[in-house]
Length: 241
Image 1: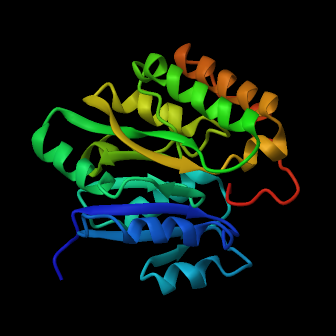
Image 2 (image 1 turned 180 degrees about the vertical axis):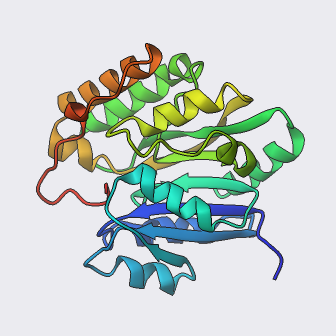
């Protein structure tokens, strides 16, 4: 069988409540030349079973964080384009994958990018924070910052920069984008995805924004990303390794 054009990689840990929603939205995509790889960190629920029921390839690795999970999935990928979605994401438009494929076909200078985004659930304040994030995103995108829950990259470029830095305790997505932008152009698609705001709900938006701000600061000024700014665990928070 010929290799697929796109490899969708989903890091997961106990995502049975969320991952089916993502798969249903992937099924509706107009572009169908893709494979799905779920990089699971030993889920104890039905995450793997659900993923396999949708035809995904499930690989299991140690619980070392989303960066490590994404790297593990990328090693198994056969596509020329790597698309990373978190398990709690839902694709809104049906032409997201098609737009990604056409982008790389049309632009040889592009190495990666992201989509527009919003919150699919949660309180009004959470949805507002996502909206503000989308508005200010273009400012930080000049540094290559991409949201970890929805981004894509040319596989060759991903391998060239060494993938995600697995030593980072937070901001591994920011770090990846800032290195990618040094080897090519990064773009934001007009299409949108919706992500769960559960982290804001369970950890508190001040804690999450503080962590994001410190991660960005460390990256901009080339400081080590300290272990002390890792997202604090919260009871019932799933999906983040």
